[in-house]
Length: 92
Image 1 (cartoon, one colour):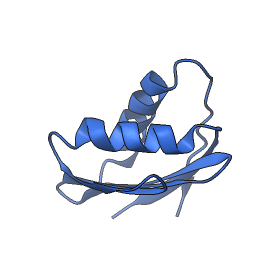
Image 2 (cartoon, rainbow, N blue to C red):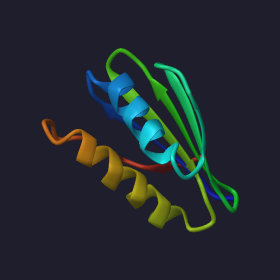
Image 3 (tube, rainbow, N blue to C red):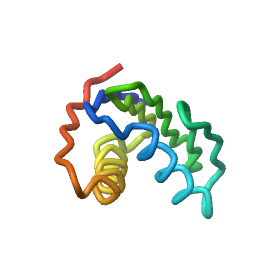
Image 4 (cartoon, rainbow, N blue to C red):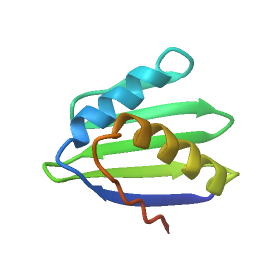
C-alpha cells in the first residue's frame, strides 16, 4: 500500500490532531491522545498523526494516495483557518 508523510510547521499541532480525530471519530475507528492519533478510514486507508511542540507530522497510507492526502489537507486547513499551513508530501 502506498504511503506518504508530511511535516507541517505549526504551534497548534495538538489542537489540529485532536480536532481531526474527533471530527472523523463519528464515522471511523479513531484512537488519539493530545500527541498521537490514528484514524482507520477503512479499505486499508490509515492516517497517523503526531503532534510536536512546533510541528504536526501526518502519515497517510492508501491505495489512492494523492486523493487521500488532499482529503486530509482540506480538513486540517479548515481547522487552521487562522494560519497558512504548508504540506509537502514525500513518499515513505
